[in-house]
Image 1: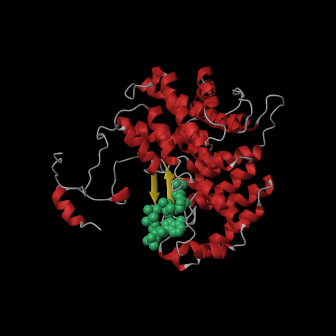
Image 2: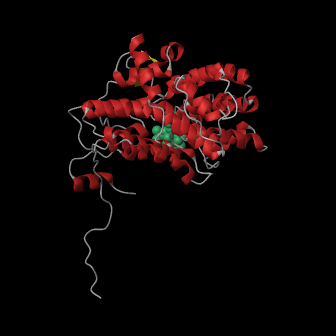
Image 3: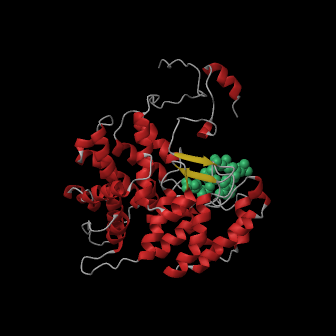
Length: 399
Ligand code: ACO
């Protein structure tokens, strides 16, 4: 209802770009996306090649340091991370301080924020050694914090990490293992989780990464910046979408509604929700990550015994959407999280953990982007302008 051109005249020469649809806030050498062609590359490597051949640890190294590691560099990275998995014992006390039914995302962001109180010797963003130490600490400790948030919510004991295991194996054991019995690692699950983490590892200037950069632009430390990113990721239009997709599929399953009826409601904006897991600010074509997840969903669900009925509903929704003018005109395709929830569920994670798994995956991207920004001589504190639409000057009434 405002005359934007009039407002722009009042403010002087600024761009007005709500949602930053057309604003590049930075240069970056980390991730390349061509949304029209459906291309995603980390440091130049196509996502499908990394998904096929790499590991989450290797991809993390690639994103953070710029090149694929040599075998000895990878071994060293792995060893350093294994050595830093323990949490300060007093930090563990945090987990008892939240309500049992707390969502694990705010628990995760709170505990990550608290790392800057427990590890005060690695907070200087301009000291290379300290940045390196906080990088390793975050990579090692965040999956442990995430697993503890889950364990606490189901009332089970917190296990100590087992450093004979790598990051993903350790996370699985800490999430599902019990103190009284040995944990039997399922290699199919480890491989599936590793793949999903690779697919989430970076996505250039998305909402949470831009948040990490904005907070970091005030020279806030890495733990504080990443904690803010976790909170941004929590929203259902961003990382929270993976949880929302499963809730949507369940809702369709438990009602008399056919997927087609649900689609009609979405299109008429009656359902109160969008088709969750569909649409993307940058991809106006099939999300290449969704293609990989979909291709593996069937295989993994048949091995792990996932819910085929929900997968069927998801596939019917997708099929209908891809042939529907509403979705075609708006270029809405499945995004990475349309099928991930079904896989996470089959692995045994409750819905509330889905976005936490996204956060573990996105961590190396946040770290890489934060580090890149701190080294960039062009970095300035993030401080957008506004167009003021409030009252003009008013006189305080004399009473
Ligand atoms: N279902 C139905 N309609 C949709 C959807 C959807 N999922 N997404 C967009 N639209 C419609 C909008 O209603 C709008 O139509 P209109 O012009 O008739 O009102 C049009 O498509 C454009 O949508 P915008 O909201 O302007 O697109 P934007 O780029 O701002 O939003 C977003 C992108 C937030 C991802 C959006 O597509 C969405 O809400 N999707 C569902 C949530 C989701 O899956 N999020 C995960 C994103 S990916 C990630 O974080 C991993």
